[in-house]
Amino acid sequence: MNRDDTALALNGNRTVDNLSYVLTELRNQESSDSALAYALNAQLQVLSVINSPGLSISLYDLMIDSLKMAIQKARSWQEKEEYQRCAAIMTNSMVFFLHAKLCWEGDRWSEQGISLLKSACNLVSDSAIALIKIKTGAVLLDDSLGTEMFYNLISNANGFMNKLIDWFVSGDRVIQYQNEFYIFLLRLFDKLERYHTIYGQQVLLKELILRYKDELVFVAGDKSCDLIRLDPNSPFLELPPPFKDRSKLMRSVLGGISFLLVLVVIFIVFNIFAGDKWLESFGSTALFYPLFSFHFFFLEFSTSIQVTIIIALLIGALIISARKNNVGKKALEDYQRDEIARIYCIADEYFTEIANLY
Image 1 (cartoon, rainbow, N blue to C red):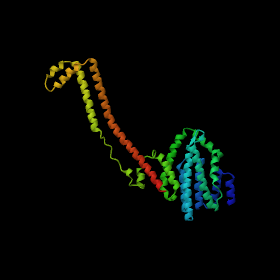
Image 2 (cartoon, helix red, strand yellow):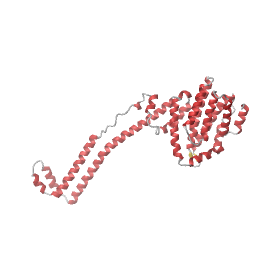
Image 3 (spheres, rainbow, N blue to C red):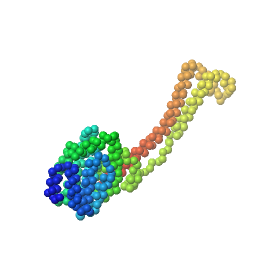
Image 4 (tube, rainbow, N blue to C red):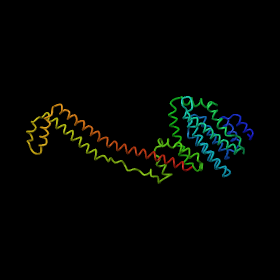
């Protein structure tokens, strides 16, 4: 396929399938071990994401492997930088295509989904134009390629919309896909750390990581071991002291008060049923004088007041006992909440450090 044939094929029908056909033809014309062949193969992996309703990190693995070979086999520093720029564009477009599918609501795209799909098409257009220029030595396409690809997808060209609808309506796929998308991003960001030397300095990738990190911190889990590699001196890596229940003294005091209230209730009930007979057992000694005084004082009240006092004391004992348990529980909850916040901060700093690599 010469330059004229390429231009004719691309300008005749600007769809994803047609672009895939042209890129495949250009790749087949190259030596299988050439840098451009590997780069074109990587671009085809991105386009395959569009035709597959699900997602898999394996598509990225195939893409990055091809891009790694393309960058290694570049004939000049300028060509290497161009492949690195294309690698960043392809990675962004792959994520945007996958995210756009998550924004399918009922039977239409949400506003965010339309924006993501349009951005993904424009990114695919940018990288495809760059690779075709390397092959033909000329710019055979203008910026309208991405726009036309977008409108073709929206208009259900090649059954793209039907595939998406069929996939999502067959079961509760939205929540499942959202979880899979987050897992995909977590694995992708780990690989962006691992392969940052392949990409070089790319602002697109830095912004991609910063765009999604605030959502991922809540599902990333403990990233302490990962952060150690990037920033071993991070203050968030300092382990907090083990949990100590500092409320033991307070709980002991409250427990003692509750116990005394129960004893008072027992004494009052005994006092009511025993009457004056129990006084003869002890005599009016100084040790029991307070009890005698309470005895005569309490008998002055009516039965209803006596019952009210008993109920009030029992309620007070129950409230104090419950308060004793809540003191320790709240201390543990505060400690656990602080630990969860620390884990979130570690994940946030980890993703920020990855972004700083670019």
